[in-house]
Image 1 (tube, rainbow, N blue to C red):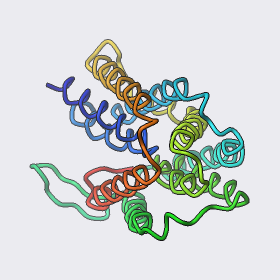
Image 2: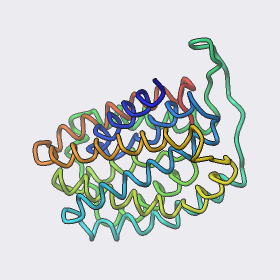
Image 3: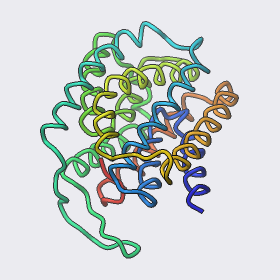
Length: 262
């Protein structure tokens, strides 16, 4: 049952986030956390997230808009390193409040509450029709990359803001998806040192239950990526914008409620 649940979440999230550009890690972490300690779940999610992005990058490398990667993705790298460094200094924060759901305590940390409220705000803005007519000037991309990379290193939540910036660049749907994936790979690699620390702290034993769960999640996520690559020419920017807005809203509400955290 645990393998099936992780596989279903990973496959569905991978397919959905193939187009929105974010959400796999956020949706997969709670599924892993049901069957393993949270530190191990964080590390396991990181493995699946990075491997999935590398797979998508290989499938879409010919569609990447490299000038946007340079203007947005390269500034995101030092931002992600700075955010990860600050996270290590701050450590975990206490929950702002707690409530019971399905017999378990839930509640947001300070970081989770702040990021969740931001996601809700950005989702409501993104879903406004007039907002879709705005375009980000090229000079704003480096600043956007630096800010979103920093948030990615600090909280793990950077794909939503990255998608908002990229939606303003006028990229075609396939280039939007491919470029976002390549930028996500840069951010993931920038955080690899922090991930390595978490792997060691989590004490992952691939010969135990964590190994099959990671393999199931990775295989299902890669299958979702392959299906998404075959559907990429059938999606529109309007459809992507709707998916981004809806997913941001759902994740934001869940983070504010403390059902998922940073």
